[in-house]
Length: 87
Image (cartoon, rainbow, N blue to C red; front, side, top):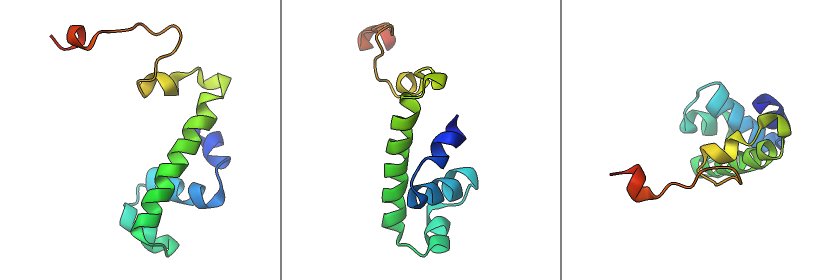
């Protein structure tokens, strides 16, 4: 499912995600390979992850796991008082 989400990203976002996350390159290596400034690569990674989150959260096969993992409340998620969670 995640690979399908990545495939749906724009080419410029997909390129940084593949190099940085899938191939394990550093941000600087990714920038060098793509011939881009480091700041541009950081920005593209940020925007790619945001877009991927939107794609995955709307995919019913993913089951809403993304929003739960990022601390966003779902309708059936229990509400925990932070004082109870960290006594």
